[in-house]
Length: 372
Image (cartoon, rainbow, N blue to C red; front, side):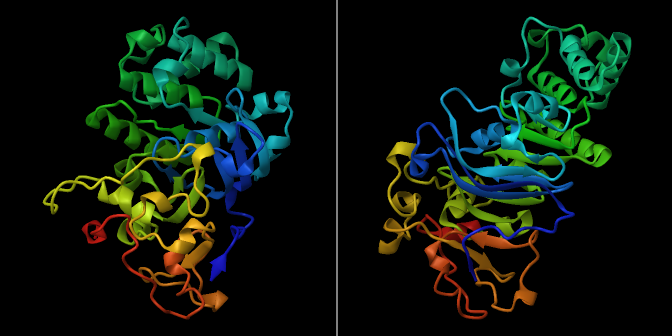
């Protein structure tokens, strides 16, 4: 079945719902940095948004928070929170109230996000006093407690430290403590393990998962690292040139990647005992003003067809069988949260035919079998 828009999820399960969101730096939606994005995030899950740099992942998170960078404009669409309503309709004062208290963000570069002239303790205490109205002494006590909860060594001493006196891993832990101190239920984690060595990266990811269980967090994880996605995500959305091109539970995505771009990302990963070196994707993500007509991935795809260069592919729902289009019986469809869908013409012919297998080789590489 071909679906043009996202099917709404059960009303008691979704926490964040994005519909047809477009954000750009001029008035042309077709050249927007984020184009007609549909996204549902379920309560308590870790949803990973993956793609190369320049695909619009971080801009999506900043838009959710109402923190558009200079020159960026909201061109259309909505961002709905299950409890707060339409986030993009809130006033500046209302946005300041929900940031941190209801939705918090861990930014990509903690060294840049932390204020270099204020101590770590002051910055965490400021959050606690602003959003929870605590006294200075109580805020200090809870700041120490939060540093302890994020496994910061010697939290009382680190409370007096400045960002430059901390290692990269410690800076990231301080950012997590600051983000979670006011008790948000949605955490936007933008590349939380960037520039960390493998050991510290694993510690930070384990910490995130532990805090998710302890605090009942919902996490939107933004990353280009598919290893991170495999380790801690429940569902995955693959983003290319400002739009989602594939969405699936994490196991399905790694076992049966459907979109050529997804297959290319997976083929670029090194593998122990693999057949030859990793295979990169030719070319690069186009700038918003230089996108081609039709499917924007077509210039980089080895399985491109003439129609790909004419019109943007629609969403196509895929069944549990690898590469099979979803059956026509609605009762047999996967649930909203377990479905696998992709935007690729390679699957369109199979869509109207019950159980008919779509092409199994839609990779951007000449030998996509290396992904299996």
